[in-house]
Amino acid sequence: MKLTSILAVAAAMAAFSPNAAAQANQSLVGTWKLVSGTTTTVSGNESTALYGQRPAGLITYTPEGRMSAIITADGRKPLSVADRIAAPVEERAEAFATLIAYAGRYTFSADQVTHHIEVSSFQNWVGTDQSRFVRFEGDRVKFRTAPLMLGGKLQIAEVVWQRLK
Image (cartoon, rainbow, N blue to C red; front, side):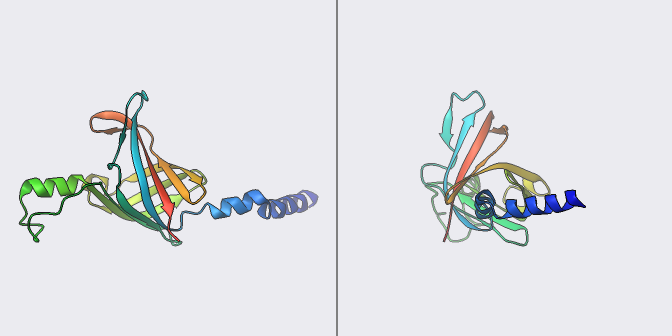
């Protein structure tokens, strides 16, 4: 009985500690704007801008556990015609190569988010889990991948988002 009371008091104190308040502010819920994306080879000797110097994107997390993301590369060109299906195949290929969009459910722990992909512009992701290591820095959050193949090289990607108010 005494141990239960001690644990309850310790839990209550922890819940009101400054550290607990900081953790409460580290929620993904809301909408975030893309700031940057970089890739670095596992050896660390090569780094590139994943989506160019000024990419665009939004990612939204709901309290109900749903998420959606769209990222477009810097310098995307409009198609030469207003009909996306009738546009020349080279233009459609470039449009596809410079955009990623996906949505589904998500799970989040203190340092990792996993996107459970239900729909994606990259069909290979549908039905997969995409996990990212998470680090909060003020009104920004950084997502970092485990090593993965990108452009034929084993790389680590880091994407920075800023919370929209």
